[in-house]
Length: 285
Ligand code: PDD
Image (tube, rainbow, N blue to C red; front, side, top):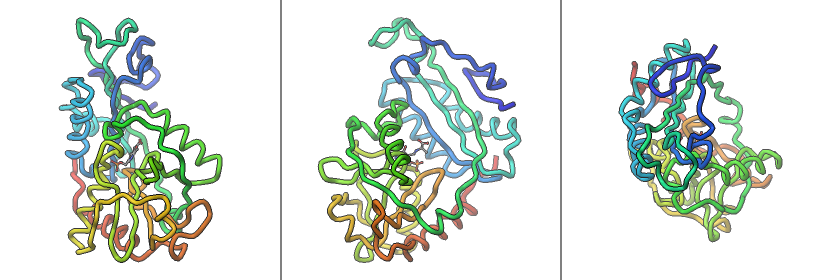
């Protein structure tokens, strides 16, 4: 059985019990992080830990568990025999268990920390052939930079994508594409790589950052500029980035080809460079 981590203990998942008064359950009062395991090491572990700490800071929650994230993650990989496999580690920290009231618990209670690791099978075909995406209204709050567990708008938007046969939905806020329901979006136009700037309207993706760094190394011009949904038909290429999908070509918008309708040359170059970077950079534990 899967071994998970809950509040300082590694235990079988069936024994990991959380109170219904947990503020994560009652209010979605918490944050989370997702990090990728590549057979023998984590990618960008420090960046994920830093983002977890930032998310906690932004919701005014202090948890010593954030300092232990990397050791908890490594332990979950070995206890679940995931060495040699591809996996994701998920960690969630909530404001703890207390009788339901909107204000922070007084006196403060210990935050709840839950983490698990799970094997993944990256989809090879999609990363070669590319995917079809849709557009949806961005009804989220204006702190999308916090990796909050309150994901209802993302879930509704993604469910709509699934039901329409799209791989992802792109959020549109005031005519501008911000990001996708669980990934960031990039475009190539006039030889330049474009993506929405860091702001309160997107999650600052770790993969997004790694891809921008790769563009700089490869001398591919990057501009952090949002594009409007009206500009989308004119881009030459588009791709999604996320911890689980890495660099994923977007070849169609609601069934209409983007550019050639095939994974573009810049996207393919970045996919190869990303793979090479993974080989170089993964930190063995
Ligand atoms: N999702 N934007 C949103 C809204 C996300 O939820 C994610 C990640 C990203 C990409 O971030 P990164 O490159 O750091 O994975 C962008 C995670 C994986 C999830 O919710 O499972």
